[in-house]
Image (cartoon, rainbow over all chains, first blue to last red; front, side, top):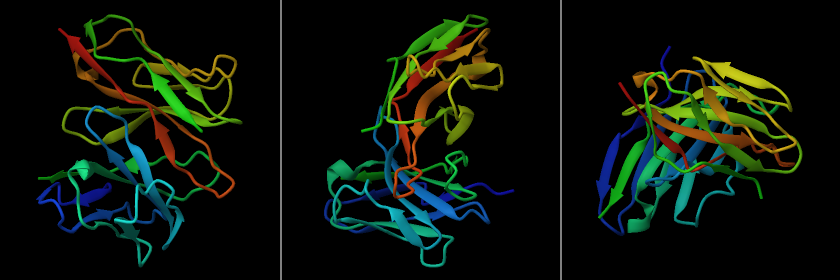
Length: 116
Length: 115
């Protein structure tokens, strides 16, 4: 079946602009995660949804970052007033559910964001 | 807080050589441990995992054993192939009281296998 998909694959924007990054999880997966990967680093957690609600948003760096998942499927990561330091690959992952500590997270290919 | 430290790369080996990539972790309690792999041009894929002490995860000839006494989860393969060239990430997951399932990753180790 289809894996996690993310659009766009690449996004170039100017400093100060607003961007939206989209994630389509694997069908039937109730848990969805956003991570950010800077060059030469491992992915860093941003936010995690269980269904429609954000169960943990402790990784969002500041209030310019916001994410939604209104129908419990597709999620959008929104970044306001982008800064050059926001440039990174934004990864989305989904899992069947959460809890139990063992559910595998399946990752999408990522969106490469470049802020000029 | 929880953290993962893995050996710095890059690592360059010849085909059929033995591979070890070291990974140690800091966490309270009993985290689940993972190795993810990122092949060139592809997304992160789960390679193997272990959920409790002394568990051994294995896949595609790779193995890693959860060692609580040394807080380690070293990745090994007896004979690497050119197709194993990728970036390898060690990670842990420890649910907090609030139920978060976030993964905490190491910085990654780039492996290049030459024919």
